[in-house]
Image 1 (tube, rainbow, N blue to C red):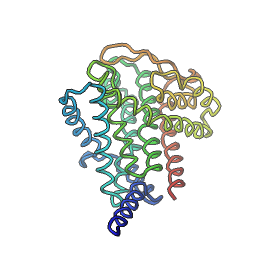
Image 2: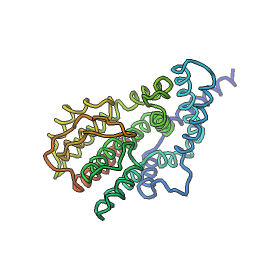
Image 3: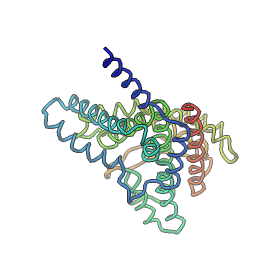
Image 4: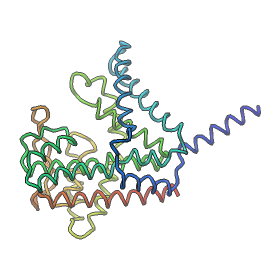
Length: 319
């Protein structure tokens, strides 16, 4: 009986560690992300996870199970393994995981490289840089369309790469953060509606929609708060979000994008090409101002201001 009680106590304590993080650890992890980003010389866990996913997918496909069932079991195994791997390192690696699973600096740096090419008059270079961070075809985009793509990427990834990971960090510690990143990565790798993934990728796509439901809307609210700063439109951001946030095929991506479009006074959305195939994206916002490098700088300021608000909120929750 004593052994059983000790085991229960250990399990309980490990459960607390699973969800435990301190404000100082949050601030240290965020500071590392802002100063170092994702160094190319350091192997990144998300890349390692992608390598594992490819092999897990092949293994589950070989089972011969119905594709939707195989894909669901594949999703469970991939998320479970990644979460367990992080949980096993806690609490000693808390700061590392917060740093590794955030992407504020890299999001800014990669998008800013696109605009730097435009400022230098190199449209071809801007298209090439843009192709590294978006899935759409970039070869024939003009300056305004390049800027639109960059602003949309910053707005959508403010939720996926910053707010959502921090939201799950506050709820379940670094392991919760890792579970979210696994879910989001699985969607980016397998959540397509093509022949290969229409059935097998059903669970990854649906679970990503569920995981991002609250963070996407929370991101919009954070953008509204940022839009109270001089030079933005608070009322317009709220109005556009409520009007256009649900207009996209994705149940979540439209909310942060519409909030940013309203705050900047620009119109996002329109015609995109993926693999040479046209896809019409509903418009978000009104063209009060033209899309320009000024628009992108406004989106960058929102990125950092909203990130700071979310970090303060998380510190308050975990304190």
